[in-house]
Image (cartoon, rainbow, N blue to C red; front, side):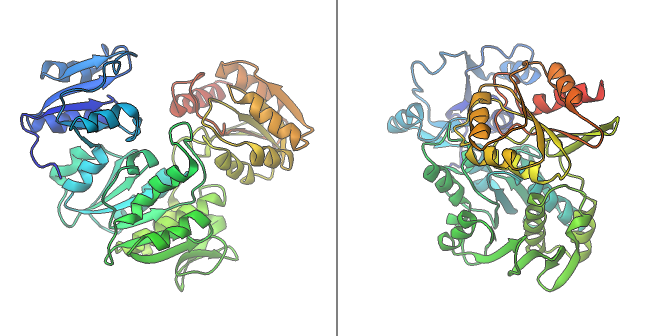
Length: 451
């Protein structure tokens, strides 16, 4: 564990939210900080100007790592830098300590951490746990990817504090501590453009339970082979959740949600759409119960929760056509879940940048669903088109109409009839056409509201 940063030469890789949080922390520790980022300029970024004035050195541009990382005591990688990337491995050989914001937070946090991972659903589940514990009167923070910057919270955390962390595979891949309560949602392949293999991706996720002890808890998905297999990797007490069968935890049976023997209510009365969200509700309820939440707080929260932005988000009903923004869907599996959430005819907008996904099952789902028109955009349009044609999709395909969301939305609306659903659920990352999934979703909503 790194205890003293004063006077140490430290490299921070990446100037995103985590990088900025880290710079703030390291300045307070009187460290000598250099930021590396492949972006050419941050001249209009207030944080960049603030940190420059405080003595942080910035190395920017696409060639920033050309000469490696030399003469640093500690290197903090952001989630975008694989801990086994050549530049980091070489720096480690030269004596540098490699760390991350997640590792640092786990070392310094005096409260109890509830960590949530999985391929999708992390943000929804983490937010639900936070809201339940808040309603139960606990001192709790939601931090990391869907909450406040982790390190900024350290002065406000004590031993009675609960901290909910959404943990991606990028953050978990070199973690050497596990949370007090680990929640593992369904795991399928994702980010194979970053990870070396599916096995390495799953191995990264497994770190969330690997270092637990007998006083900790692991909340696993009984319906998912990968998640449930983590039971053999942990010393923690195991609890399960399921939307298919009765288990030791929270489960759905005949549309009723149970917490052990107590009935919480009807799954069909949840305000968030889709059976995949039953998983998130069951996982969150189990974790919150283990953290001391009462039934009243659990019931109140799960049945009033309307979901997160860009996650199967209702946008508008216009001229009897309903629009949903599911821009956060960046894998085929999450788009399949979105399609399963509707029985009405769907005009589906899909496609984007490459992540190494297999679209075979998505093609089969689209071909055997209520999708009446498929609008394909981005680099992956060709792959998805091939997958749906192989699956014998016989309805209309509009292929790469434009990179402009205004035209895409107008085309979709022209295809719609009374009672139809227009669904943006790309199954792919956003890069190439959009800066990120948030910008993609915001543009979709703005153009829908402008109709």
